[in-house]
Image (cartoon, rainbow, N blue to C red; front, side, top):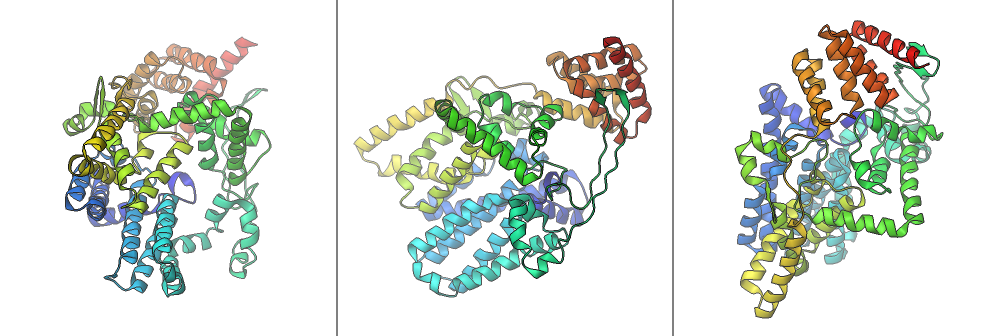
Amino acid sequence: MLWGQPRMGSLQAYLTSFFFYLTGPSTISLHLSLLIVSGVLLLVVYDLGKKVGGERVGIIAAAYWALPPIFLSFTGNYAGGGHLEAVLLGSFFLLGACLVTSRPSKHPVWLLSGWLGLLAGIGGWSSLLIIPFILAGVLGIVANRPRLLWSSMPLMGSAGFLLGSLPFWVWNYFHDFDTLIHLGGESLMSVIRQFPIVGTVTSERPSTLSVTSIPIDQSMLLIVVAKTTGNTKGRCSRRVSSNGGVNFWIGNNPDYQAMVDIRPKLEWQRLVDEPRRAGVYGEAAESRFFVRKALAWAKSHPWAFLRLQAHKLRLLLSGNEIYRNQAIYPARQYSPILAVLLWKVPGVAFPFGLLMPLGVLGLWVGTRRAPLLAVIVLALAFMVQLFFVTARYRILFVPFLLIFAAEGGRWLVHTAHRRQKIIAGLAVLALFLLANLGQGPMDRRMNPDAEYSLAVRLGERGHMKEAQALFESVVAAHPGYAEAWLNLAVCYDEAGRPSDAEAALRRALHLDRDAVKLLQSFMRQGKPEVVRKLLEHVRAITAGQR
């Protein structure tokens, strides 16, 4: 499961494992899985576009989707939690819903119902992002053919769903239904345990906790290594905080940009530990803690909240590709194809800066012809707006916005009369200016978090000189990066430079006293001698500060 959580991303891992089985583990196998899924989605985009505006619209939308820059730069080398797979399954679900509502139907309704249920079942245990597709498809079926509710469709759909979701139930049966606990908390499980088959497998198991500590100062606990098995306080896995609530807080708080820019490791850990410091335990409860915090701020500062939503809407509509975890524009220097497909010059941010104005026009003129697709675009856009805006999340509705962009262009050129062309042209121009003006230059250097992570990986693989050079580059550009200073101290110590190691360590502790807690990662890497030497430096530093 992704990030150690009992949800999300499973289908992506299973598909990749299948290609590993066929061809062996390699970078090519990873990219092959992505290529096939993206290629099938291209065909679906073509078919949906054809249903909306004919052959030409389908071809234009598919041609644009054929080389999306976001997948070349991000999804191709990072497990994103099955976002692309969710869009693919959701697209197939919409196609199935269109076939069900077509008159006369070319396929038996019972067969299509089972197919829709199967897709919903597979998508549900892989990513909850499929929910807007399911809701839109079901609403479309109910609105167009309500009598199907009294046919075999509900029964066949339920059977297909149970079959598609079978891996979900099997995994949860042998793991105390952790997914349901993760998503719904103990209150949901108290209801589910009333079923005998569930109650027999969710009996309480004792917890074991092992703690290793090295006291240096009475106010410091340097290393705490805890392993929890079975049930914990709150009946939730404590490895990773549930991210729904904390992401909602990140996107809805008094200092949006600072919160979005929060660094991994120390800053992130302090954030996700906030509920526990307030006496709130369990992933579901911790998630609700952040949601309540965000809602309380919105209630007490309504105008600031509305200004923030307007700011996020501007970001959502802008042509700039806002990164999350890994910057996109610096990757252009390593890929000539990406350099052509992704660029910014003053006044133009390609490609989204050109796509968005025509896409909005297409939504305006094409919603009546494709209401299900319009609902999907608006629902996914709202989901991104609700949390925080990044390119990797915005890509979820891009395949469908492409269809509306092609339809908007077709309408503007071939269908609109003179007055409509003038009004629509002015609207497109205004949206173009909104999307492209003030987007700033392209970053040529990778973001510090990505450089830091690369340096850590180099160090873990024994390339200490390369790691040291990269850490030095990071702290030169970002002197307040405490984690980088600490890792640099480790590199200096292994290079036989104890005075430099102590200076770097002193700098790290000056910036953040919690930085020393990261030494536990070097214990896991099998470097106890390095940790021992650094702890001696810490003892000397803390003694000198008393």
